[in-house]
Image 1: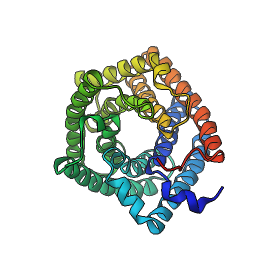
Image 2 (image 1 turned 45 degrees about the vertical axis):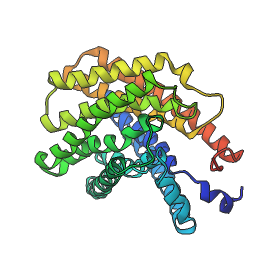
Image 3 (image 1 turned 90 degrees about the vertical axis):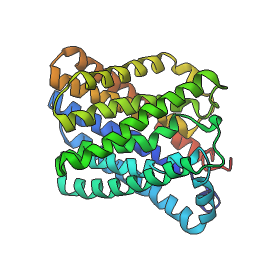
Length: 318
């Protein structure tokens, strides 16, 4: 494998792999609480995932240093720009996963991720406002990624800072989710179907309401009618998309297939929270189901990703 030739095409979307892995760790930590399992298992997976994160980060830093023009080109792309916050979202997820083990480190990672994601939010929304290149065909669930980060900030942040600091992030996230959801549904229903490579990203639709449910609970410490709307809407989307998954999976491997993983881990974690609050056994089984499905997908996608790297099917020019 000639790394030097492949670095210019190393995609920022590789960080979506980390999102899926850390999302699974967070969900598995809930399994540790519910079933009294060993905390060593998620800690080991966390260490391995951190290694992958630093490896991806090193590769993209090399791209930035050696091929700055390619990074600028990627940032100016109407679709790829929304993948840049996957880096800050990964940091925010790490801060949540680290909480049970290293609270001080979690705070540092959360603070850095929050500041970085706030910057990404302002820059990307400013790009949307001042655009001269966006068309309805460019719109896809990928646009939710900057929104998801703002909804994530209160999850770990509720341990470290006042709720008044966190409510603005939640407000921005929830309002932009509602607006973008309307536009994305319009694009899906009334315009040509999403390209094959982008279809798996429909699973991203599951994530914002699931994360908003968890975030809202962290801010209010209760499951009220509004939070139930968030959870059940996410649950409905999860069922709908799982029933249609065959139509979303392409024969060719794309990194976008990792979009299946993080949203499913989000609804799994939300189901665990519903079980912890309500004690209804149905939510426990839903948690087990979503955790099992997401874990199975991660195993399969990890194998396919390693195989694609070996066969030089990733990091190729578009």
